[in-house]
Image (cartoon, rainbow, N blue to C red; front, side):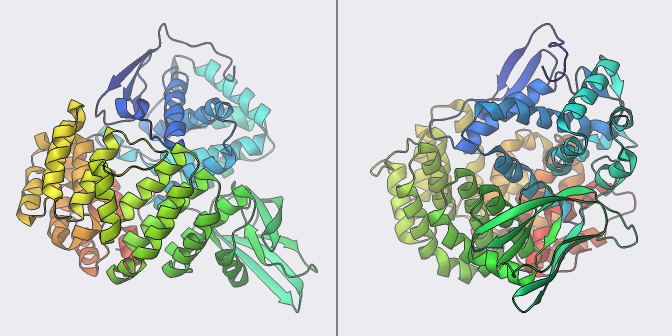
Amino acid sequence: NYTGIPYPFGKFDFLLVPSFQFGGMEHPGSVYYNAPALMLDESATQNQKLGRASLIAHETAHMWFGDLVTMRWFNDVWMKEVFANFMAAKIVNPAFPEINHDLRFLYAHYPAAYDVDRTAGTNAIRQRLDNLDEAGSMYGAIIYQKAPIVMRQLELLLGAASFRDGMQEYLKAHAFGNATWTDLIATLDRRTPDDLAAWSRSWVEEAGRPIIRVDLKANGEAVESLEVTQEDPITARGLLWTQPLSVAIGYRRDGVGTRHRMTGRALRISSGATVPDYVLPNSDGVSYGNFVLDPSSRASLLENLPADEVARGSALVMLWEEMVDRRVAPRAMFDLLMKALPTERNELTIQRMLSYLQQVRWRWFRDAERANSAAAVETTLRAGLNAAKTPSLKSAWFNALRDMAQSPSTLSWLESVWRKTETVPGLVLAEPDFITLAQELAVRGVPDGEAILSEQIARTQNPDRKGRMEFVRPALSADPAIRDAFFAQLKDPVKRRREAWVLEGIGYLHHPLRAASAEKHVRPSLEMLLEIQKTGDIFFPKRWMDATLSGHRSPTVAATVTTFLEGLPAGYPDRLRRIILSSADDLFRVTRQARP
């Protein structure tokens, strides 16, 4: 209905592949899927169910966007992905009426896009490609997460009906042929008085995000001036990002958002009103940028998040970005999450908070801080698990507890759950849950860790899961020599063929609890990246570096990465250098190292 073009191919088959390295692959008439992504267990979370529906819709949309109309060259490969995501949302959203889809879009796109776009390794959405041997390294969060944000803004700029009509014209004009981003912009440009070429330069052709500052000046109890300004972090470039901007003026937890259009460097909002508790830019979760709150708003939001679901989610993401930029202390973010989690009722926000809590503790806290907070965290997680009303929500709380557990009492309880002498009321654990539980117990060095792994392998009925667990097991060993041998074998490309298995093993090898003994593997992992790019799939290089570096927070590892980057030979692929910079960004920030 949306495209105005009937399904263009003769058949539409699904083929489910165990351990398929992609979520899906859009072959015309026969889509390949990663089997576990579609065959969910009873304990699947709400996010996993939404993810399955979105994956199917994404691959279905590719039949029109990518297969019916294909990019002329790989510099526009992002187009097929962004429109598949764009259409997937339109397909899936009506099937989940209980979900706040504006909030889901915020969580599904902004944090992942910011994770790359804030780094020195970021890239433009539309990238130049001179040789197809580097095409695989073009994929990532900028294409899959930032581009849909930008496309939603383009739809808002034109209006939904004009945008749809332009898309229909574009598809019909280029059916069973090739087209470029320039072709689409020319089609849409006829439907708006705005200069889409200038808009495209800021949003599509250049990398990065604007710095958007709130400047609140008070005169006693009255607002003297309230202004929002934007600037290009690269001063010499001087870009302007035209976009809608909703600003909420909040008193207590309630705020009323007013949408404006930011077309210049400054936007004057108001004066004369009573000084609010907070000013929240992007209260509707549509705008994109590095938002810098004024000090009073920052303090207020760290104490109490807004009542509105989307505004609350936007504030949460914004405060996280402020923490990453060192405008908010990790301890203050931790305190906010611990205070907010027990009263939060939205499952999407609970899962986002649990994810942030896990990242604060494993990456941003020192070992002593993590140990000292363990009892309070585990008490909060157990309470959340007991209070959760749905299996999906119980699963989210249980998974967080399993992944963050450290205290002997909680580990003992988790071991009892694994042994099936304890149960979690209202939650049915499936085979993958018991596998992960066994592995998490082993990496924590519980006394019976090896026996637990052996028994779980014997218990496992699914042959693919059994094979995966047998492959990963050496990375979980309490013996450093066995772990070292696991890494050494990965220098053989044949041993890296099952990439999902490799990444799981590397993640455990570099787990924060094992990070000190894994430091020696960081330099060899960096040295292997070029070969991995040549022998692996398109996502493997970035995932390899993420798995290698995400468990580390030591200055020694940061120095290792810096030394490697500074010594790169002439001709080393720039995209791989950017992948390293992107994956190492949190490490540099945590250790306060200057980035190369």
